[in-house]
Image (cartoon, rainbow, N blue to C red; front, side, top):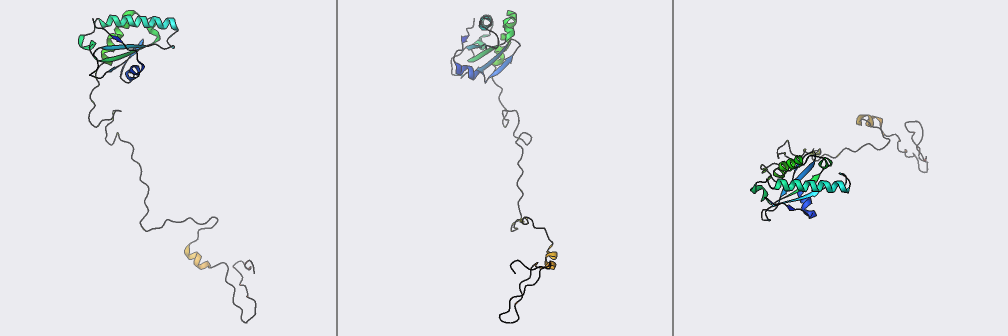
Length: 203
């Protein structure tokens, strides 16, 4: 008859949560293989939360699971019982009223499943199951547009100024002409009217 030790330390519970899982209506089993240099033998722990029921119901579920583990341990093959593996059983509400043989059958199916070694991952394959090919890689980033070498970026027109064709600008000429020089000494400068018929400011 194989002996299954109790799993008690919290770090072992947390490490087991990263392993394989097996789900039924009555429980969820989590399992992982320990370091091959560790001591041989299965270790098993229970997790029964308050959502399952009050204290009396949780204690009854724990007693039923312990009895089912003792029954299944007598039927385990020797190589499976000697595996350095940890198993955590997370009980659910139906485990309170399920038939005892149903609980034992769940354990017979769960223990070999969660203690099975992980399959070797093919080279070049990520943990998410996607290869490093084009289909599984991250989307390519668009490169920013490059300006032609030696070409200065176009500057926007000043605020409030309209865009004019160069030919129109040359034909239109300056809006305000410079003051014409007086003919004789001491004469005041004569202002030339602008395109609107007025004179520049300050004249």
